[in-house]
Image (cartoon, rainbow, N blue to C red):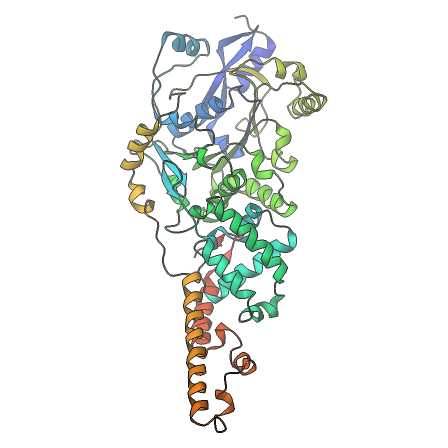
Length: 523
């Protein structure tokens, strides 16, 4: 094809000197120009990105080709398979003449290959190594988002977590949290939080009802032990390539808030665990956040501020985050401003609202000689407009791009293939079997039983004394309601219990601190 100033500018801007991810070829006169590749700089993956477009326009395949090449370059990769159509990334694709011709037209040296892949599932729902976390580790901020609590309810939940942290009560699963809330609102325990504000019975009731509904939806399996260590996501294969972690999520499609919040938990854990490394030649991890609009749906201002801060700062930890959604307007402006690499597939404008969204999308791209409000709706499947950050941090010119073909399968891997990979994983032995050790539920239950036994023994002794000599029975032995209340100011009134809690709280209180998202920090 003949060269023009535009073609020359694109060819120069996207010819990065370092490691590159090949996105495809510039479209010239409605045909891909193999001599003008459109690339993405590997070192700039930590400047984050956006892959947007209407359903069926090729977002998933664009995610796939970036993930494949990022892993091949040595970066660990995390992807979420929300719709069940990404598992084929673990299987080399079958070649064909049609595929070879398509690849050649885009300047792609196509080979059949797939990254080393681990499959995960949330709490063992579906196929994959189970990812679980404890309620304590998950923290009150993210849990409030999942339960859709208002500001008052969220602050009360924070008090409950604070009490558990300082008193050494491990909240491993949802029954632990439920039993603690019930204790703190009972006659025996309601005085425990008075010094720091307390919680009303009405607020506790709302939290308990939402917790019960949440548990009934099957979400209880996501909380427990063994808790997943997010450092597992940063492993490399024997050949030096990055391991691709694929979280299988079709079983939780009916609970989108839970899915999105768990993804945010993983990102928050990585943020607090990883050291500052600045810009690397190859990022440690590239994190693909599919169906990203779910994260921001009905989110509080405080939650959004924390998301923005995490996205802004996590790049210096060597982590890149790509958000995948339908339109850029699904992403808050402060988050969108952090996304330096932009790949926009087709958007359709069937309504005035669609037309407004299309115009807003076009306005977020650098100035172009093309009228993007006309180009974006006219893009075919597998085509996109692209602008990325150059290695000096400047945005590249807008390039209308024919996206390359994946080298792994575009068909789902199938249950048998996934099962084989999961069974061979060394992580299955580590995380496959749930553990239920002693925690808040067992501790509070045991204390309640011990207290009930003590009261029963006192009543029995009082009754025996009264039978022997009703007039001489010591007043302290008479089984009156008022005397029991005076003597029993709470489950924690027992000196031995108080001593235990004081020592446990002193030790654990020094160690349990919470991160930006309220997730638990470990020393």
